[in-house]
Length: 155
Image (spheres, rainbow, N blue to C red):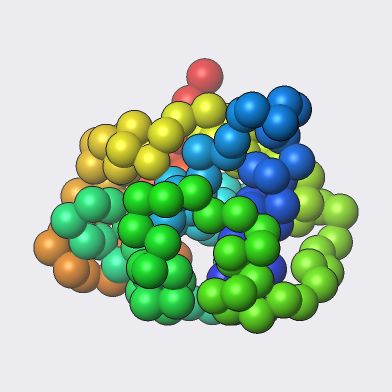
């Protein structure tokens, strides 16, 4: 298990690649990326039986946050994070993920990437992992597993 970096970079690459038109732009903001990391971690615990990254998640005012990612990417505020900008902030490195992880991340992006950052913020505020840890408590892997397993078991 590594840091959040390869997972975040995968989402940035995916976001960049889904822009079809030279006049379109990605909507991957720092807020949205934070929530995608949360959903990826939760679903990985259920579907893969393990966490994707070792960085802890915390319940902050605007939803779940990987604090290390927050401090490295906060300079982007509400602007779009492109691959070039991400690499400048955290360093360029190749993303080496196995196919199972890539497939899971693509599913997470397909499900949650349709929402903007504020929409995802609102969604997480309705979910037990954030509600039970707020304010400023850690969202544990046990809390994520319990919640996402319950969702997975729903018809």
